[in-house]
Each structure stands twice: as C-alpha cells, then as structure tokens.
Image (tube, rainbow, N blue to C red; front, side):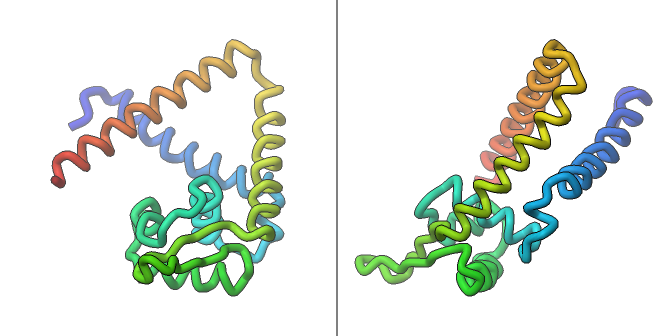
Length: 156
C-alpha cells in the first residue's frame, strides 16, 4: 500500500511527534492542568464557544459522538456552570447551547495560554521556518478536509 519505505518511516514519525506535541501542549498550558475539566469537556466547550447557539444535535455531530453521550456531557458542563442550555418555545425538541460567563473566561484564558505557547515555540525558529510550518499545516488541513468531504459524499 505504501509506495516508499521512506514514506512509512515518515508516517511513523509524524504519528509519534503528533502524540508528543499534544502531550507538550497539555503540559505547557496551565489552564488545562489546573482545571476540573476532562479533554472531552474542554473540546465541547471550545466547539460551543466558537459556534454560539449550536444545537445539541450539531454538537454531537461535530464531536462524532452519540447524541445521548453529548447530552450527558452537556448535563455535567451545565452543572459545573460552563455551559448554558436553552429550549426554544417554538421547538421544544431542540436544545440550544451557549458558553456561560465562567466558560467564556476559561476558554479565553485557554486561548491566551495557547497563544503564549506558540509564541514561545516560534521564537526559536526563523520567520522563514515559521511560514514554511504554517504553509505545511494549511496544506495538511486542506487535504484532510478534502478527504472528509470525499467520505461524506460516499456515505450519501
């Protein structure tokens, strides 16, 4: 399946570095370490923060989890006061989610600490290397998006 032995080696290293990089981000971002949240809860809050008034159904689709699991996750986040849940009068089957003030404060602090993390990293490489890294990440993202869209088309 893999055309070149070198490609297989690169894939293995990419997988290992991806795991290590994620681990470093968690260690270097104090918001995550000192919070009461799990990674899944953090991801849910981020989705809701970036998609105000998202429905529970849309959140479960974005997170690729069952709606019942998303409902349990949101129940916990509402109890912890990170998320606010509303049921519109015109459609009582719909559940609208928004980040509370506590959730906004947490996510904004998390974003600021992520920015600081990247600033610390980037100051160790030249502007040319920074641009190359960004260009590669954009390309990986675009290819990934195309693959996801292709899978979505095949499923229809």
